[in-house]
Image (cartoon, rainbow, N blue to C red; front, side):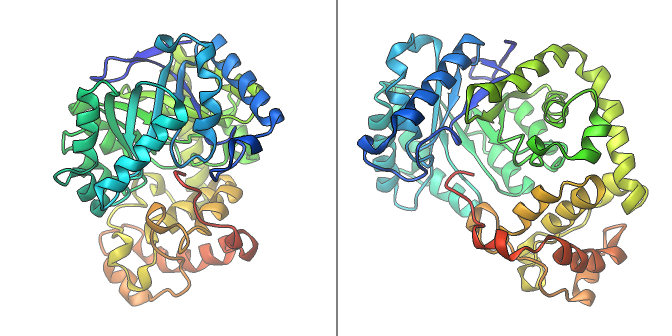
Length: 397
């Protein structure tokens, strides 16, 4: 395993993190007796395999159902001082609810302290206010830090890049859980701000939110060969020095293998990845126009400023990678969360496209004349009633 300094926390973080979103028995809290031996045995194998390979950062959350309770059964088998344990709790308008949830997390995990603690899902500025209010989540976390129950305080967010950048620049946190991938480079400025504040950066869900890359999209796989698209995306993230670790949600021990193989290419990432980026960009631009990857997002307003709350930015992004690289599964899954994702995925689908208003709103965009038609076309190819039935984020996704 390769480790990196995780910003001012000074934690030596493994490049690969064991994410806790896919191994649990249930997304809901259930009686401990209902956790099956099969599921718990599988988690025991996953944890043992991870630690045997130097993956000693375990990242879970109160919102991940039985994940915390199941981990608690296994943690006593290992040297606690050699494990970097992280959990996450969402801020609430009433700080007492946040405190109650934190105590549930600590009770579930049966540990005296957390190495890393995230104020979870600060997905808009209202939730940032909840976190920063007097006596709120941050004040509570700082008190627990004084008591030795928390070592380092960070936050996670699914907000827009502009909002996340605002959160980082409060200077209130030591690290951030962030979305940053080839298919979403909008948070590059957030990485730069994190560097300015010497914050550690954990990239959230690079294989799922990074494009459903486990599905071997043929067009993309050809362009990233000999690397698997998941390996390409991981090394793409590590081109930025501030990225400390990628959280890998695993359902079985073998899920780690392709990521462990990626480590062989880590030192060659600056040689291998830029030519692949160029190939991928050229492929997309052969379908959407020269300069598309550099400028498609410029001047597109936030969904809240758009008629009918259409999330133009997200729709155009998803259309780009579905059309350009064949990431249809990813694009459909994300598009059909619009209108159902709440503060985790705000804005609505392009059901109505008021062309005149959109042209005016996107006046600074060099491709503005194309955008109304792209919105209509995106809805035609991405809207899926079956996916929409089950759309909407699980807690913490």
